[in-house]
Image 1 (cartoon, one colour):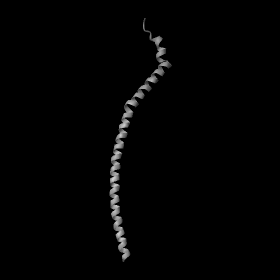
Image 2: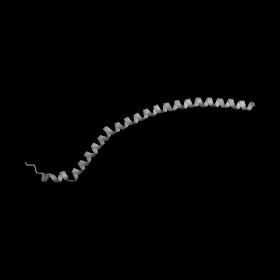
Image 3: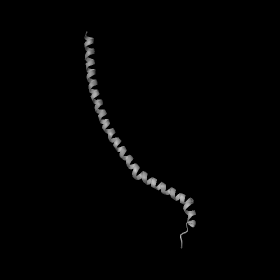
Image 4: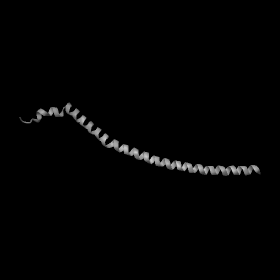
Length: 87
């Protein structure tokens, strides 16, 4: 039995081969996305959430400091108003 490419050529270059190549590319693309890209995206999201929590803590601390300062200013203004009303 000899190998004759002319007999095999229609099968290799026909519609069935195109479907096979398409399925192979889709399978490799799926594996790439599932094994490489999704874990990388999950790691990025975890990093972003960690940074957000740290930023949120700094933000809340700043708001508390501003609230204390504002309370002090309000007390000073209240005293000034009281002094002005007495005169």
